Length: 202
Image (cartoon, rainbow, N blue to C red):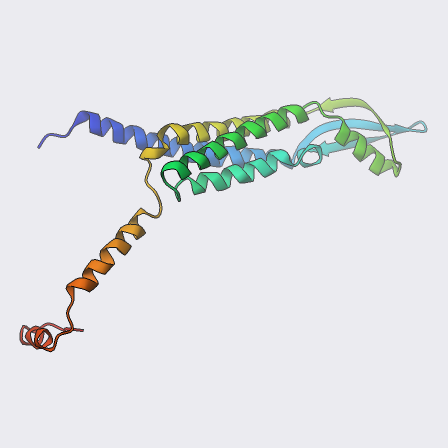
């Protein structure tokens, strides 16, 4: 029996898209979460002629990228727990999480408010000026992580209908169970016949 080349190619494409989405989504969420703990901005807090170095991490600048990364990670897992319309909705949420993380990271790349807050906290004042403001490359790494999440969401939207679902095996087992129960019989004559054949009717 000859294999259908088209069917084999479709199965291969489905597996590749599934693997790419899993890898892209997991890596993207990890990059965003790691970037949130790194230094995004550096400056000098100046007050009354004194200057102290201050830094602001990604979580100081904005908690949004981390929150969206967690949402995206949950959506990546949920994609395999739902089917049909539910899968489209969850895949869309995954893509939107990535897009939101990109936007939040790009906005945070030039943020100075977090540095000013850190300066005020360091100086024990309500407000403090900052000078020599500089930004690191971590916001861009965070944006890259968001891009990976977005790619995972787009793959799920494009190929997700062909991916397997976690619950399929259990649903099939549940559908088969009633049929096995219906085929059994508790009539005395059937039990005796089973014993005569050497079978255990229990």
